[in-house]
Amino acid sequence: MSTRAASADGTSERLQALTGYAREVFGHFMTWVPVPGDASFRRYFRARLVDGRMVIAMDAPPEHEDLPRFLRVAALMRAAGVHVPEVYAADICRGFALLSDLGTRTYLDVITVDNADEFIEPALDSLLRWQQASEPGKLPDYTPALLGAELDLFADWYAGRHLARALRGRPGELWSALRQALVAAAGEQPQVFVHRDYTVRNLVVSSPCPGVIDFQDAVLGPIAYDFLSLTRDAFVSWPPERIDRWLASYAAWARRAGLAVPASPPTLRRWVDLIGVQRHLKVIGIFARLAHRDAKPRYLLEIPRFLGYLHAVAPRYPETAGLVEILDSLGAGESPCGP
Picture 1 (cartoon, helix red, strand yellow):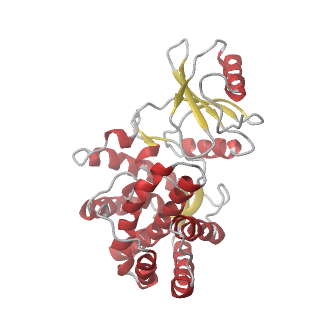
Picture 2 (cartoon, helix red, strand yellow):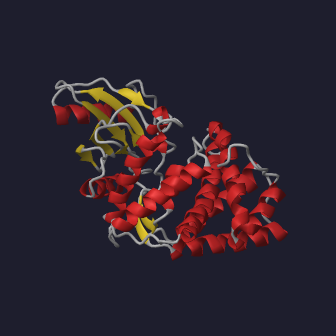
Picture 3 (cartoon, one colour):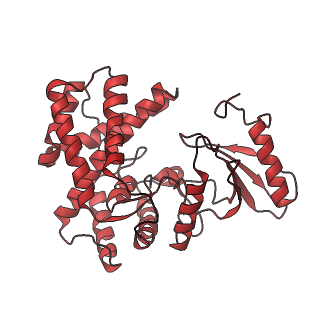
C-alpha cells in the first residue's frame, strides 16, 4: 500500500508507527482523528493528551517531504514572533512530527465581507513581523529558475494537458516574452522572507491570531508576494477598493517598520500586480496538475477565479499585454469571479 493510498483508520503501517512514536513521547496511547490536509503527501491527525492539550501529528514521508525544512522554517517564524505550531518532538528519519494544535477554524471558515478587516489586519501585522526578520542565506532564494518552472506549470498542465492546446506560434512567442518579463519583474523587488502560500486556508483563528501553518515552502523572494497571496486568494475574492485600502495600510505600516516598500502607490501596485500574474498562472497550472495527475478534479472549479484576476490585471502593463491574446487563443475567457 502506498503512503498516499494508506487508510487513516489505524491500519496503515505508517500510522501505526506514528502512534507508537507519540506514545513514546507523551507516555500514553492516543486515538488519532484525521485532519483534512493539503495537496501534498503529508497527512495530519489530531488527538487529545491526558492533560487536555490537543496535539497534531504530522506524517511527512521522507521520500516525498522535507521535514527538516519544515522545522527550520518553524523556528525562523517563531523567532520572528509569528504564531506557528510548537514542535513537541520530531523524528526526521521516519518523517514524524508532533505539534501543538493551533485550532480547528481557519480564516476561510469565518471570514466574511462584514468581518474581513478584523481578520486581515492582524494577518498583515503577522506578515510584517515575518518580513522584518528577513535575512539572506536563511532560506532558499526564489530563483529565476524556480519562478520560471512555476510558470511552466501553466503552459504544460493547463494549456498543454487540460486544454490540449500547446503554446506554439504567435501564442508561444508571447508566452516566452511574458515569462521572461515576469521573472525579471520579480527580481526587481526587495527580497524578504516569503511564506509562499499566505492564504485564508493557512491562517488559523487562534490566540494570538492568526496562527500560521503550511509554511514549509518558504523562500527569500519578492516583498509583494505574500500580500498578493492573502488578498487575491483561491477561495475568496474581494472588491478592488477593499484590496486598495489594505494595500495602503500595509504600505504605511511596512515603511514605519523599515521595510523597502515604495512611497509611490503606482509602483507598489505594479509590484503586487506583476507578481500576482506569476502566482495566478502557477496556481492555474497546479490546479490542472492536481486534476489530471492526482485525480483531484475539484480544484478545477477554482480556476475561473484566477482567470478573472488575470483578465483584470493583464491590460494594465506593457509586460502583460500579450497575456490577453494568449488567454484568448486558449479560449480561457474572463470569469465573473475576478476582483
